[in-house]
Figure 1 (cartoon, helix red, strand yellow):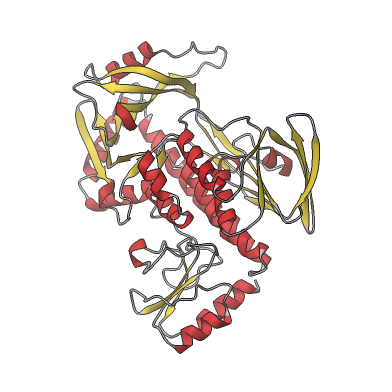
Figure 2 (tube, rainbow, N blue to C red; figure 1 turned 180 degrees about the vertical axis):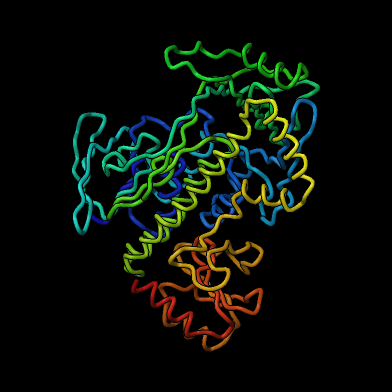
Length: 487
């Protein structure tokens, strides 16, 4: 039992972490307090960078077959188009936003995990834990009242915004709750002014924005700001008639909605922990950061937390890298969390401007900036998350280190694919490279791949450049790998 890593929370983040650890042969348990997976759509978008990482997991195809491919996004004010960006222009094998309900994401990840012989243990709650130098003692409570005490080498909290693990660590969840109230509706959308079925549409209005996210089968998610919430009263249950009225007021009468499957109010919270780790306990996903749904980054950020942590845990657990490798997780992912929260907050603030002159200035600025290709490309890179990197990481060494390794440079399966988290060496073939691989067989893939430029690169199992050095600088590569093994 001591060797089983314990993951708390079987949403998309916990499932991703479990799939990755299982792929690398790490023994684990995945528990969740809920009796069944989510049945609602919740998070809708899987962005290209997450799909690229799924290539390493081996489950991208199932997701592509189950979702709708959104090709771009349009920003409007009334009937006027303020700006438009196409995801088809980004340098990725997946130049689109994959629109897929969270319920489907959890189903597909659960099926992928089952392929490793691992099932989610449901109606099991973490009731407490304590850390020792060489492990974590966790107390579990089962649905039948049975209590269980286990010792695990690592405990990872993927248990959402109300995380028991975070509370057990005593971490502050710093941030704020926005005062506005929002309405969410998953409905069928029809009519002469219905937006293209492969496009995300944001409509600015003096009373607040309205966003349409396309879904399969002629359906869409509507998200609309309804005004400042009154904390002294509970709002009436949302209705289809209210959704129709809001659409007509802010977009026009040419869109009809019907057949609702989910209607709900929500409030925006923006919160984050300062550190994602204490000793042998880690946080990932909503347990560590929550933010505005603007940009649809939340689930993707959490899943990428899981991918980042998994290969490091696998190497350390197998004794192939020094335990200090795990020190890189929190700084790397906390910096990304800060960026995502900051961007989402800015998008929300811009969309909800209330003063007419501020709204007019915003619209003018959007129209002017979207005339520049560089602005459109930067927005697309931010939304699709292909621009994420770790330039300031303790694992990044040399010019360009920390950047995403372009998939077109892979020269074979993506780095990190297969059943072992290995770095890939991109360099000229020769005896020096072969000697390096022979010296570090548990850290380096057995094949040297051609470099796309005049430099040598060591690419991490999650597809980011660890080392970038002049071609033939084998001493730099050797020092880097020695440091990895003996941090």
